[in-house]
Length: 264
View 1 (cartoon, rainbow, N blue to C red):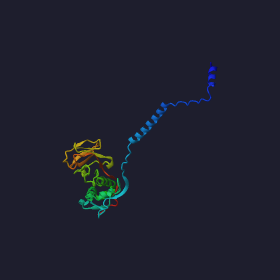
View 2 (cartoon, rainbow, N blue to C red):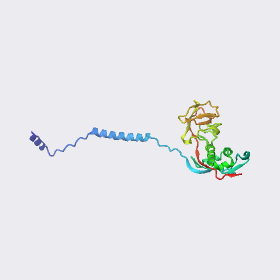
View 3 (spheres, one colour):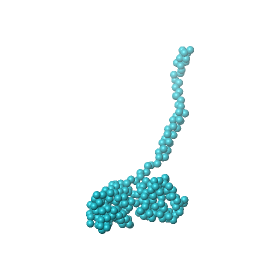
View 4 (cartoon, one colour):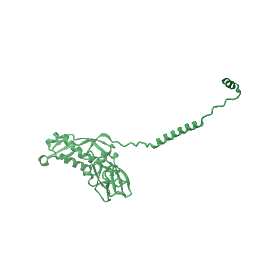
């Protein structure tokens, strides 16, 4: 039987063209579909991932002289000696970080800056007697740092042109006690305050307590999740405003220096 089958195969017409092997069209279609699906998935994945927005960072450190714009660059302050009749003279300077190199100089040119800074620093010096100023120089420097930083780098609201003006979009501005009693010191580009004018609510970031307002408050206290507070004036907030605005400080003092302290 095997012999007969071999003979039949051998007797096949040699002039007859061999039929080409049939392609598996289903396999081709399946492969094409898989490739197309993979390409589509890749494109959609690329479209779905938003471009990462670079958050502004503080630059520094660089030198800042507190009273460089004044006719008198020195601080003159009374000490406790002889019923506060003695005084000292020195030029306080610092190294700072801020979101822009020119921010500290612009801030020091604002209305009331020099008066507030001189008054705060003089109040610190008045706690000391002449013989203690050098012995407790580190303590004095730390206290000057603590009172100077919130004056040089106050909490700012949105796109306000200065620390005491309102954000132009929302109308929110610092309250009456913000300069003296505000304790919130978060970085400007890392924090927001959410405003809902229609509902009359404020919230620092997405995790602070929600604070209600009527619209006539000029010194409303708002807390963050850690109990740090700001005081705001909401009289300019429109009922149609809804959304967040940036809030926080635009720099920090790294170190403060008194230089030579001359007693008089």
